[in-house]
Image (tube, rainbow, N blue to C red):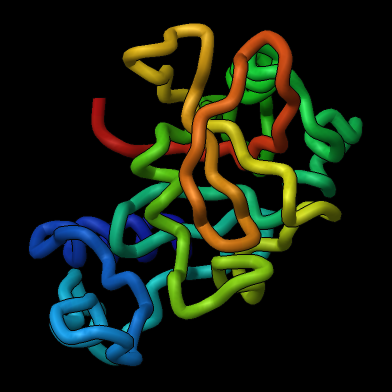
Length: 180
C-alpha cells in the first residue's frame, strides 16, 4: 500500500534526521546561513510528498499537513479564528480518513518555512496559501512570559510573533503525527 511505503520511507529518513535546511543559498554577510548551509539534506530526494487526498507528508519531520485547509468540507478553516476555536476545530477534525489532527506547535509550523521564498515563505506546490498572506497562522505554543498569548507565524516571510489567544484571529493549518 502507498501509505505503508510512505511511512516506511519516513522512518528510514528520520533515523538520520535533524533540522531541515533553511533554503538560504546566497551569502549576504560572512557567517550567515548562506555560508554554512547547515541543516539536514535529503540529497536528491524530495522533501514533501503529495498524497493526492488533500494531505502532504514531510519526509524530514514525519508530519502530515493539510495542503489547503480552505477546501476542508464545511468551510470552518477558510477564515481566521480565535485560538481556542482553532484548537477545538483541529481536535474535532476528521479529514482524509484521520481523526487525530491537531494544531501544530511553533517549531513544527516553522519547519515548513523556506527562507529562500517570500509571499508566501513556503513551497506553494505543497502548501496552498490562505487568501491573505498577512494574517498569521496559529501554533499551539503558549508564550511563556504572556500566557494569554500564543506564538504565530506570518506566512508572507516566516516571521514569528505572539498574538492574543482571546482577542486576535489567525488562520490554522492542521497537522498530525510527531512524537509525544
